[in-house]
Length: 339
Image (cartoon, rainbow, N blue to C red; front, side, top):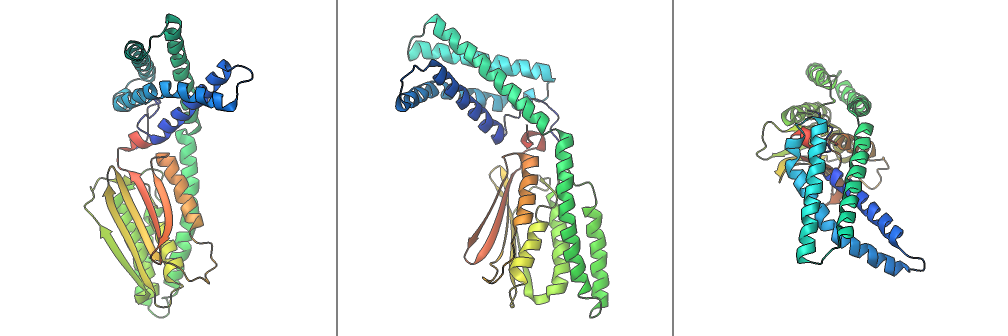
């Protein structure tokens, strides 16, 4: 489930944005280098816009080509993949420059070779930066961070689950025993190696068991509504993504309400992504608790470790309900993990 190739993942949105940012920085340096003393800011911006309009279309075409061939290059040995990437970028730059010279504006030989030299510099700088970035997000470092984040989630789950069982021990010992059996099964899952992705069905089962425990404690005050559209059974997601959000939905949205409320869980495909939406009633205005900050921060960081910028997490209030949405790509993990 982990990315094994050192070739930058050109199907990852984060890689594209970083390359574009590096490209812009190089263009800024180029215009500063070519600028003359006494030139105003407006003139410099016009110069930057003119050069950018010439360089951006070829860059976008090259990035598009690398996106298409990445699945093939990622299976090659690292030196061969780098060589293919470099040759492809140089070949497309040469062809695009020749087309520009023929159909747009003539270029001198010096200008033509200047473009090729700048392309070489651009490719080398981007590859060096992306290689440094990948080393910073090496599997060992990422796994250590994931383990630390998972460790922070478990105590909250344990605390809330034990409170639910304790409330039943004297009044309903049989139900408390059943709840303890459910907890044993839950913690068998929780204590497993949760660094890799898990099947969506496993995460749903975990959430249903947790909600069953909370249902024992809150009884008719807690109602759960599941909206599950046709979802491929082999979809994999990061573990413990939904369950902490359900904890917050119960703690902040249901417990403060005397009449209780409905927690709605919706999971459905959304293009090439999977949409996970959890909503609960807004807590009363007198509720001074910190809300979902810890869970959201934890989940956002784990999503970043797994997917870089490919995943999204957003929260908002609508129609007197608090809503949290997570969007994650459904492509193979080898194609979406930080590259």
